[in-house]
Image 1 (cartoon, rainbow, N blue to C red):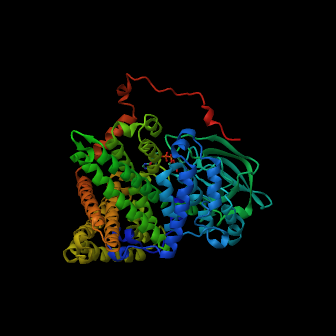
Image 2 (image 1 turned 120 degrees about the horizontal axis):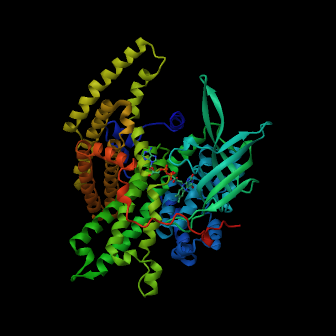
Image 3 (image 1 turned 135 degrees about the vertical axis):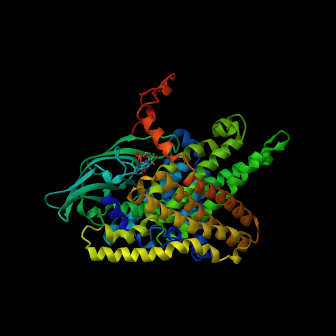
Length: 616
Ligand SMILES: Cc1cc2nc3c(=O)[nH]c(=O)nc-3n(C[C@H](O)[C@H](O)[C@H](O)COP(=O)(O)OP(=O)(O)OC[C@H]3O[C@@H](n4cnc5c(N)ncnc54)[C@H](O)[C@@H]3O)c2cc1C
């Protein structure tokens, strides 16, 4: 916990839109006007996307990548020539110098076409060497390593281990400083390292010597740049998955690998902070990528909804079909709004760790629902592979592959459950800060009494404000037909903050164990952010493009979000949580083993497939 909290401290800065939400303030000013890219920058990104689209259309068939498990070497070489591995690297280090918004627009386009290729580019530069180096590297490190990516060097990020997933502070990989202090000696294993089987350089996170702080030994976690051709680096296995068949993901083993001391990023002990800082921005690629896939699904759903006639009517016009089409289109627009808003905030230097986590949680979960509904709308064809559809003369619609490729999104770069916990920790932060002096062992009686006085006077005014503010809040006339959604969102923001506070008072330190309660509160806050983002986006689109469909989509999205918020809010007090806890415990205690009888258990061993071989 101590390590994780230290890492968190490093990225704390000024308050953002969502951190205000948790404190009962819906600051609409932060959302208007909806950010627009400077025309020059937009044109540069448009040109790059156009060239990339031509390359992918001419040379890459995503269904072949899926079937063969390989992205053609020629395509990777062409991507390198274009500078696709140096998108966000500043021009002074040889990169293309794209902003976060342009980078995410490019990733959205690639992801809409081929998931594996998007992962190749994104694992390299959303979390691989370029991102942490630009954020935390020394000038010398930047000059040495960054120009290599313009000529196509590929990188990866190695944090996860076989025994360590969501809780990286427990890692086992260890880097020991040599006796002469010139290098570290790395030993350990890293699992599921995307690009790991083809990477030239990776970021590896490992334990270093513990430090004694206040008489206590404190574990240190550090980050290093590692050349993959170093002696002792072994690619043990190329991992294969349900989808994303063309990704180059592996189990890596390090045996007495020498890492020069100058390859340490930042300082010893700052590795987890660096990893979290990197992921806080890096995870913004996922919302953009998910938006790209959602747009592709929307296109499939709209065409099939019109084309396929059953019972005398296009299936999209049957009421059950309409519900799917309306959900897919309106939710896609909310995903896009969150993606562009958060990307623009990064470009402005705003700390978006809370909004990035919300966007990641929302977009990955919603994409899964969108794809599931698109498969359903396609009926049997939704379940059929594109190659099979094509072989019998139909359009090769790849929704089956898109569904498989997208399943991982709610698991990696912080699973949905971990996003709930991450957001909850941020949500209770300001309250925790206020009581912190009381928790410090060394605080004297006078200091404690003063703190209690301050806390009492703060909450004596803050809490009634949360009850009363909705009575005299703004009415948002500029939002036209969407104004009432902002009124709802700002009113509900007070309800959210008040309810969160009530639960903190009720459960005190035990609040962190109330994952179901916290999860509901975080889902509500995420939907509030989505509503805020989509209304601002729609208002801007309606003005600049002179059409009213953005307003209709945003309005419908907000209607759905409001129903979700109200249902989730009711389930805070009306739920089966205690029954859930009790029953799960009994099942884990093997009291329902009888229910597993009567099946043919799956094979526990399989012969290794030839394709599992590690490339030479
Ligand atoms: C295709 C793919 C690519 C990947 N790429 C990379 C990469 O490039 N680099 C890298 O370092 N890693 C990578 N990973 C690892 C990925 O980030 C981890 O899978 C992820 O962090 C989750 O860890 P885990 O799988 O060990 O799950 P676990 O941590 O074991 O969690 C299993 C389940 O328990 C839940 N859970 C865990 N802790 C809690 C808790 N406290 N409360 C409630 N629920 C909890 C999780 O949400 C999850 O549902 C990749 C994984 C895959 C499959």
